[in-house]
Image 1: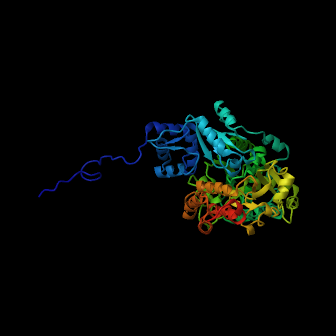
Image 2: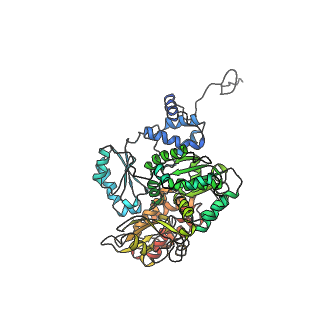
Image 3: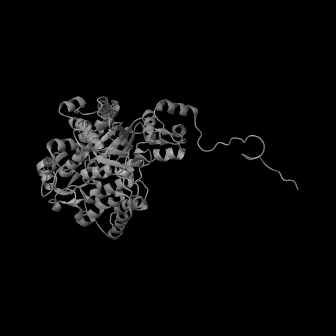
Length: 564
C-alpha cells in the first residue's frame, strides 16, 4: 500500500510557501503612519501618544492604521488593539465598519449636568443633528460650575443649549478657547522661580524643604490626603534612579479645581513640581493631563518650552502625556500603567508606587493642587498655611462647588469648613426657590449626606465615620427639587461605564447594581449584600467606593425610594 504525502509548510524539499496569518499590513497605511510619526521614537511607552496622532489626523483609528502602527513599533497587533479599545476617546473602526462623522458632540451627563438639564440637551441635539454629526453622552468634563456642558469637537460650550451648541457646530468653532493666564514672563516678574533657582544653586537643602512641607501640614489634595513632606521623604529614601509623575487627570465628577489653577496660573504648579523633583532627585517628571482639557495641552506645551529655554529644568526632564478618556487613570497605579503606554489597569499592592512605580523605579506622585501650594508655603512660612483651618482643622482647601448654589466655582476656604458655611459664606446661598436637601462632600465616590448632617467639618478624617470622605473636595449641592434615588443611579451608571473590567466585584457589581437601582422598588437586602461584596473584594478605590452613594441613599433618603 502506497502512502501519499502532502506538502506542508516547513516540510519537504525547497523553501516553505508563505501562508499569511492575521491582519496584513497595508503599504499605504504604513506610509501614512510613518509620515505622522516622523522622527518620533518608537518606544512602547509612547504608544498612546502615537494613537492620539492618528486619531487627531484621521478622526478615527482604522484597522489598517492599527496594524501599521503595530508593525512600526514592533508590537503585537493584540497589544495595540487592547490599548486603543480601552480608552473612550479612541474611535476604533474595524474593516467592516464605517468611520464616524468628522465632528463629534459630547454632552456631559455627570450628576451636576444632569440636574441642570443635560438629558434634554442630549435628546434635543440628537434630533436636531440627525446623522451628519455624532452626538454622544460623555462623563464629567471638569466644568461643573457652568453646567450643562457640551464639547463640540474640542470646544467646550458652557451653559449649553441646543441653540448655542448648534450655532457653535455650524460655525465650525471646534477648537478650544483658552482663558487669559499668567505666562512665564509675568510669573517670573512676580518672583516666580526664585525658589527653584535657590534649589538649583544650592541655597536650599532637600531636608530643609521636607521639614517645611511637613510643618505646614500640606497633604495630597487629589483625594488620598497623604502628608506631602512625608511622601517626599519616603521616596527620597529609596535607591535611585527615581522618577516623578503629576496627576492632572482629575476625573472625579464634580472636580475642576486643578483645571482652574492650571488655566490661570500654570507656572505655580510647574515650579512646585520642579522643586519636588529636585528634592527627590527625579531625573524625569511626567505630567499626565486629562484629555478633556485640550486647551491646556497647548498652554502647557508652550509654557514648558519657555521653562526649558530658561534652563530651569536642568535637573529634571519634563514629559507631558495625554490621557485618553479613562476615569480609572486617576488612580495612581493605573495612571502609571497608562504613562507606560498600556491599559490603565490598577496594580495590586504592595509594592507601592513610591518603591516600584514608573518603569519599576521609585516614583513620587503628586496632585496639581498640592504642588500649587509649594511656593507659597516656603515663601510665607509653613505657619501661614497651617493656621488657616477652622473647627479644629489645619490648612486651606480648594472646594469645587457645583449644583444648586447661586455662585458655583472653586472656593478657597479653610479646612474644616462645614457645608452650611461653604454655601452661605462662599457661594451666595442656595439658588432662589431651592431648599438645601443634601450634598456630596467628595464627588461621585465620596457618598451623599442629608442636610441634617450639614455641620460636619469638611476635611480628611472627619467624614469617614459617616461612610463618606472628602477626596478631592468636589462638593455637589442638592436641593428639595432633586431626587436622591436618581442621583445615586446617575453615579452608579458612571462607575459602570468607567470600570476597567479587571476585577469581577467591580465589573459585574456595578452592572448588577444599575439594573437593581433602575427598578421602581429596590431590593434593599440584595443591594446591601452587593455593596458589601464590591467594597470588600474590589482591587482599587473605584469598586471599593462605587457603592457609597447607594449606601448613603438607603441610610438617609428613605423618602426618595421604595423598598420591597
